[in-house]
Each structure stands twice: as C-alpha cells, then as structure tokens.
Image (tube, rainbow, N blue to C red; front, side):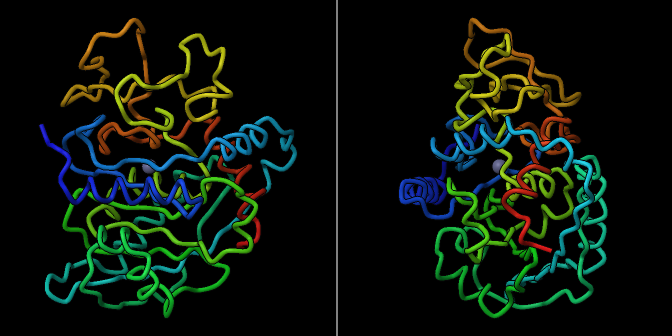
Length: 304
Ligand SMILES: [Zn+2]
C-alpha cells in the first residue's frame, strides 16, 4: 500500500489553504493502474465550498430543460510543455485523438470541443506537481500562452502520481466570466487516458466527485435511499452514494470497504467522476451530463 509522500502531503496542505482563502482550487487524479483510496491516496479532489454547494444545488434544481438541447461548442487550444531534460514523445496527433474521444464523452450534454490547429510547444523545467503547487510557476508558463475566450489545455510532464488538475473556484461561480481561469492541466501520460481527460473537463463544468467532498472510505453523507441525493455527494441523484471503496483488480466490480460498514453501497465503478481505476471509468450518468450542460450555460457561457 502506498503512503502519502511528503510532497503530496505538502500539496494537500497547500490546496486546503487555497480552499479556505477562496482562491482557485485544484484537483488531482491518479491514473496509475492501482487504486488510491482514502488517506493512502493522493491529495484528490478539491470540492466546492458550502456556499458553492448551495449554488450548485440551486442550479441543478432550476428549470433549464428547454436550453439543455442547445448545441454548445467550446474552443480548445493545446499547449505542449516539455521538460528539456526528459522530453516525451507527445505529439499533436495524440492530442487530436484525445479531443475526439472527449467529444464522444460529452455528446450527451450536446457539448462539443473544437481543437484549434495551432498546438503550441514550449519548455519548462517544472513538472506538473511543482506547477500546481506554485501559482508563480503556473503564471510564468501560462501568461505568454493563454488564449482568451478559449479553454487552454496545458500538457505537462509529471514526476509524481499527479495526472491532472483543473483550477476551479470553490464558490461564486458566476465570477468565472471576470477571471482568467480557463485552464486545464493534464500530464503527457494522462492525455492518453480518456477517463482522466473526461474527469478534468467534468470539473471544468463544476462536476464534483461521486464520493462527495472527502475521498476517505465510506465518508459520504449521501443516503442509500436517495432521500438527500440533491444535497449530498455530488448533488446529482442518478449517481448513487460512493464510498470510494475497494475494487476487483480485473473485472472492475465493487468489493466493499476496507472496514465493515452498516451500509451496503453499490457505487458506479464506471463513473468518470469517481476514483475507481481509470481503465474502468467509461461514462457520465444522464444526471451528470445535464449538470455539465447547466454549468456550461450558466457559468461558462462567456466562452465561445
Ligand atoms: Zn477530480
């Protein structure tokens, strides 16, 4: 079993502080073949704050049904960041393939992504975890490259479990229109993993993790009977309570939690927004796709 490394612990503490300060928060996902759960995992998610949860609950309960079928397209510009001491073989064709798969995964939300032809190449000695933990490093890379009105997808090498992060607000989501916060960071390895790409873009459109605001096993406050599904977990009712538990190594089935619980969970181990193995995660639920579209229209409509 892996232990939290000092670096990851530092990242956890850093991002916790970010959340308290209402600064943009970040998310990490592990794309290694083995599972990382609970306190033995990486930093994991940065959830929305309590006021932010209220905003999302209100949004998801609002009546936008007539707008959900509207086709919405977002431009993406990709920036390949190479570490000159350990360059990878990532090329434009790989990015094109990833965005094609992303389009398939968001089609149910009537959202498409238009990858711009000019993929930039730049170099940095900083790996993904260093950029995530130091906003000055991030700014140094992104300031000369960021394209307005566009999702800027930064592809950076990683030297840790960190596979990607999306700088997001914890609350006041309508402020996105006034902020320069249209970035997603994914590692060179993870861009080849459709689940991680879908996961990070899910966060870009405000999706929360299926297990709620803590990756600790069985810590979800969502009830099995669905009676609080609009207020707990990810605030979406067709994603059942997720204990972020154990999973069969081969067939992706759910095995239970390390410690016995009184609850017989039945999570969706195939859900993009869970922490189950990336190769098992293949889908959003209809409720998540609806939530993505609502957030896209309400909070990211300024991107066109
Ligand atoms: Zn995440």
